[in-house]
Amino acid sequence: MDNIIEIHDLHFSYPAEDEESAPSEVLKGIDLTIKKGEFVVVLGHNGSGKSTLAKHLNAILVPTEGKVTVGGIDTSDESRLFDLRQTAGMVFQNPDNQIVSSVVEEDVAFALENLGVPYEEMRRRVDEALKAVNMYEYRLHSPSQLSGGQKQRVAIAGIIAMEPDCIILDEPTAMLDPQGRKEVLATIHQMNREKGITIVLITHYMDEAAQCGRVVVMDKGRVVLDGVPEKVFSQVDTLKEIGLDVPQVTELAWELNKAGCDISPETISEEECVEALLKLFGT
Amino acid sequence: MLRDITIGQYFPGNSIIHRLDPRFKIVITVLYIIMLFTGDSMVCLGIGAVYTIMAMLLSQVKLKMFLKSVKPLMPFLLITAVLNLFLVSTGDVLWHWKFLKVTSGGINISVFMIVRIVLLIMGTSILTYTTSPITLTDAIERLLSPLKKLKFPVHELAMMMSIALRFIPTLIEETDKIISAQKARGAELDTGSFTTRAKNLISILVPLFTSSFRRADELATAMECRCYHGGEGRTRLRQLRSAPRDYIALAVTLLFLAAVIVIKITKPFAF
Image (tube, rainbow over all chains, first blue to last red; front, side, top):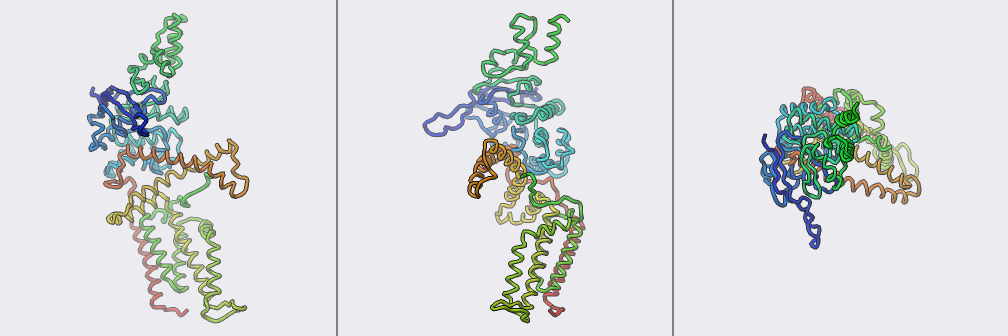
């Protein structure tokens, strides 16, 4: 499979606020490649640089040093900015602040309108995108009538309408209630599964990471762990050291394992854990 | 409390007036205003009144709403009437007391002015009652688009208006939250003298402004991410198509306007 995102030795600093202070380096040399169709979760607590990294994938920020290519396009190449943004769409944290129009379907069409897509094709793509996120029946509603989860799904539809190869979501569930989170996550997983869209999900919720194909953990501008969830979460010591929680089941399994029980610390789902515990107690 | 605010006074419906192309509705409204101001006799106004009543009936908006639209302008109407009544001195003197006198010409002109203003308000309300603000913005953008050649920022203005419309409910909700938050911290917003209350408003406006700036910043980034680069080469999902009924409505309006102009020039009725 091809790599869709290639990050090579990425450094990024925000410019110094005044002459005396040194520029603050947020990203300190990141190497990362993401394959087409992967579902990658980027974890890290506040200030780890995960959002800054996300902004590099969409050329909102360009590297101070190093190189980022998305779908073969160098993000610092301004002449291909629109191609890049069609290849990699971005969904933000606050659903209210990314919806432009007062009518749902017109908001979904916003990117297509900007790109000058002809009417018939626009109509088709908007309807398809709305159906894909199960918001078709709300197409004539005003966004203010929708719940947070629904608004976020509209925002996702707005990106899907561009038919991107990759969607980057920057903490899309941080402002939602549990029901909204569930809806949005289900939608993201469905996009990955059914349309083969590469997903980069930035989050600080551990349980969201447990359901994906690959976890990248960031701390202080560097990638510290990278691998399948089972492998990453079994590194309980490292995770705790950088201030991240481990999913409860994994922590339980890890503690039991440390206490000498025969249970794998690579347990990440509740079902797995229950099964392992039942086996352990010999029932 | 704040949630009750409606902007634009739009009453959704499916009448023939609702279904007219908004571009035609704007043009027709302009013609209507010209019609009212061209007419200089009661007969002309009568024609205007017939037209207005016809449009009001077709719009299926309740009469009460039209009366409501006139209400805030009552003081203005009264002042106009009183000034005309006493200051116009043509015709027969009907009543006088010291320097004040009322003439038949004065009465005529007062009544004429009141009827004209009431018709003006009611007639133009039909436009905002039957057209949603977002459609209206869209129609204005398209009608003004020839001005783009003169470097007039038509698209930018329309975009600003539609974003403002989009964020009105969001900001109202936010204001509600800030008010509750400040009350929870002991702010007294409903008591005190006018100046204290005005000062207390600062505690609501400052957080509202800072959050609006943050929203604006995030929205700008989100718009850029969706390839927004101004009005150039943009296509639209909302298609405005004119139907035969639009041309019929325009023709009827032009007919009324022509009648008013003919009467104004030939003066077939002696008044």
